[in-house]
Image 1 (cartoon, rainbow, N blue to C red):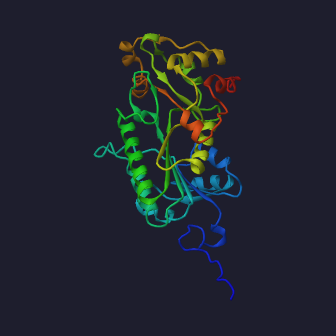
Image 2 (spheres, helix red, strand yellow; image 1 turned 180 degrees about the vertical axis):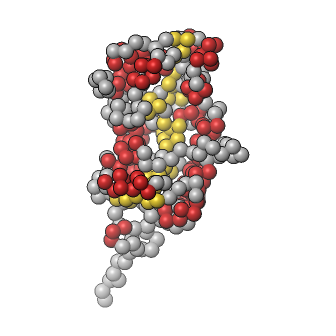
Image 3 (cartoon, helix red, strand yellow; image 1 turned 180 degrees about the horizontal axis):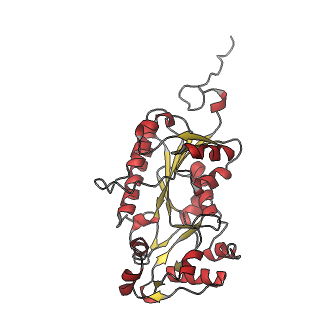
Length: 319
């Protein structure tokens, strides 16, 4: 008697699909600079899809080998086609900053996860959050198990998105990883260098009032994302930063010396409120040193730019 043939299982997310769907499919939500860097580093056997809100951008995505999908996280009816489409999902879209009534909620993440629940779940989901969810830590070293204390509405919306992503991971059996990202820099990224700020002479805090900040080169962040998509542990959080421990003013001094520009003026916190925009002041009110041991040990990420000094040196040629 011949053994029964082995048939594709309908329980497998790949077994019952047509051949063109059996390859890995990565869906990028919020495919801006970092999303494009992630896509560029994926193997050719991986099919990359990206949600875009504008028809004008579809040709640009196709030119990069990315399949564009027209949709909008603010219009849930446009997201139905995302369900069951990808084996891995990367969520890089920021929360809406306009909602006054539910200012602490990230309704965009809620809409995305509601759409993904409609059909078979992806194997993994990576969400790029912000290190701002920790709030002010008084310059202390911060690991991923530290309790969250988001102070700004922007950080509170990110913390809400993290809760939703982790709940979805538990409920759907998805390996949901969260990357808490600090300041991103790169020479080929819009606004990705401190050069213009130095040329404007924007002040920084005097040493006694200064705060610790963390950074990550955009290329290293893209590599961290790819590692998390395949190696991230279920419902795990990773500080996605480099090894640098610098105060903000020292960072700008370092950049000024490398660029051959004047160092920025130093001002006390008491007068900074009169000289700096509110957004910049909010960054100057929080001090923390992120610990990236989990990023390097669990995701096995070797940073290409372990310090901002190395990254800025690569960017220090005249514009």
